[in-house]
Structures are given as structure tokens and as C-alpha cells.
Image (cartoon, rainbow, N blue to C red; front, side, top):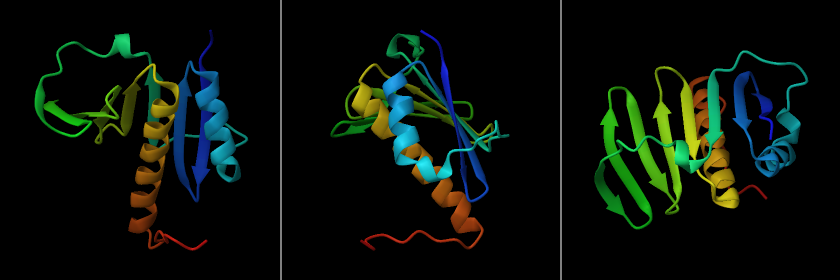
Length: 135
């Protein structure tokens, strides 16, 4: 199976997602079809989706609330588990995020939320604010 790359340009916020899950890539292209970049971009955020067995075994739980678990950070990396079986490692300074999961729909949901959160924060800083509940 080969890796698929999806390049998004959301009003100048470049986000690249790489995954070995063709369904996740298809869903991203569908939900963000207005923002698909025809050319490879220099992303301001790189998101990598990987199988859960590639998650480092050194993660140590800090505390949990429901299905969400926060792990002890490692240097400049924030570590969280969502939905019970989706692990997310954020390296904000490096502008990288890795999602470890074999749970297709849940992995997609985490990826979707990371894209929206990051793009929203960047656009807020430029004075382009999010509007909720318009339709």
C-alpha cells in the first residue's frame, strides 16, 4: 500500500496530510474540496496518519476524562488520546502532528479536527474569524 498526500490551502494556510489509508484521504478530499491545492505546497502544518502499532510505547498517562487521555509531554511534544483508540502527538514549534490509529472513522475525525483547529487559529490571527451556526 502506498502513501497518499493531500495538500490543502485554506485561505493561505497550507496543510499537508499524509496517510496510508485511502479512505481517509478520500474523505479529506471530499470535505475540503474547496481547498485542495493543485500543486504541492510548502505546508505550515504537516499531519501524518500512521498505524497505531507505530506509536512509541514510552507514553505515560498523566490523567484522563472520559475517552480522552493526556500523556506526560516529551520535550516539546503534547500527547493525547481521543475516542479511546486514536493517539495524537503535536509538535507545535515544528508544526507537525502525528495521528496513530487503525480506527478509520475515528482517525479521520481526529485529522479533520486538527485541520479545522489549526486553520482556524491561523486565520483568527489574520483577522479572519470563524462563524458557527450559519446554516
